[in-house]
Length: 103
Image (cartoon, rainbow, N blue to C red; front, side, top):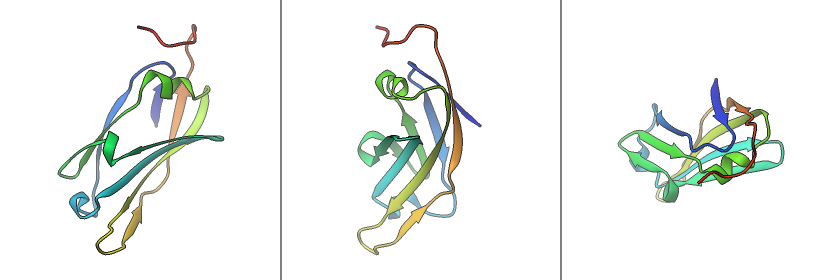
């Protein structure tokens, strides 16, 4: 289970197997909870070899409410028109006592 605490800036390193990420220049990592959807793209992910570093901001985690959601990775190659998608993985959002961004 992946846990996300609201109002924090979590990061994860995701190891991808079964494909070579450099063959897929378009990458989406989508977090979805009810009608709230956050998609990180290759422009805001750090991709090295077959690992992806994903980071969420305080604003992004505050947009979630306590409860469950799902994450999915999708990739696309504009050269071959191949598209791949991972399984959906569950995450749990943990609440905080005082709402809002802290600086």
